[in-house]
Image (cartoon, rainbow, N blue to C red):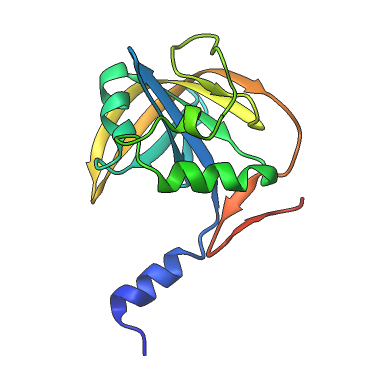
Length: 163
């Protein structure tokens, strides 16, 4: 028998989310963390929201740097997503440890993940607490299509959707 909380958690797993890696660099500190709770919130101006726990190392980096990048991952990036989502930036430089290749971003200091399908460079315009996470609202100031492919999504398991 399911408890109410377990039923809610199981139901929430059925919501499909794009798997991304959010990067941020502030001075000599940097991090890359897997974020599936991300969504568009406006077309004009182009805004997205990334929901990140205050426990994550990247949380304060974004708050201080006032910027972040979002890498939309392809199906071949599952191992990288799992690594960046299970290791802590407090203990390891995930970009170096997993040998993640990066490119210089065009308009901000945060690294661009070279192997991503798409990179979105964001300027932080707002943030607020939502339950046990912080919603970071970023204005997309630059975007790069890096390659074609099927995007990695997560429901109750990692997978891709063919269109």
